[in-house]
Image 1 (cartoon, rainbow, N blue to C red):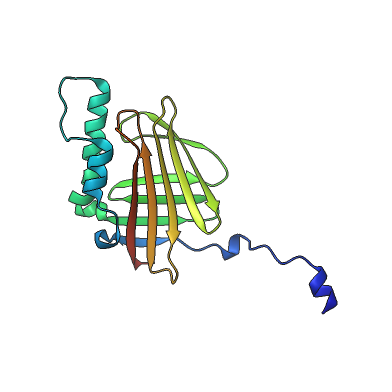
Image 2: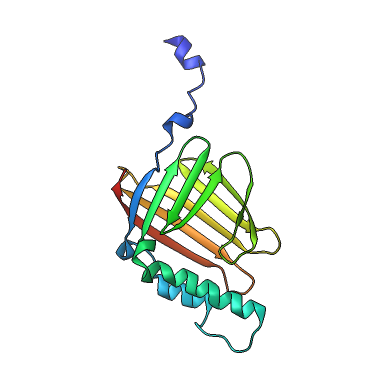
Length: 175
């Protein structure tokens, strides 16, 4: 008994981390109002002239709105192991590797530096433009009981009026 009080408490290891693998359905009633958040951050859905930044902004707006309009993009599929985290909606799947930075092609065509890391019981992904200041960060939190998932998503881009920050809720439909 005395020996137990002298030993440090065990540190939770990788085995105690939650299992995010599964299929989740977007739960708009539990999520932030995407239309209002997109309008505030990205601005109007049209542009005047042909400035490159305005074209990027309008493209970003259309890409974000597709989540609410395309039913295939309302289903989130996650697979992860100790080394890989895959997350995607519709036919867009992002692959991240724990412990190392990778390069991928961004939705607008540029190169992105991508990372994934554990932050306590959460998984945090980050995609940064290799050239530029654009950045997407997602914090995945499995809710108690494992039946629901919250994704706090932040998108920053020079063509936007301000960063877009949304909380997206999902209900697990399949493990």
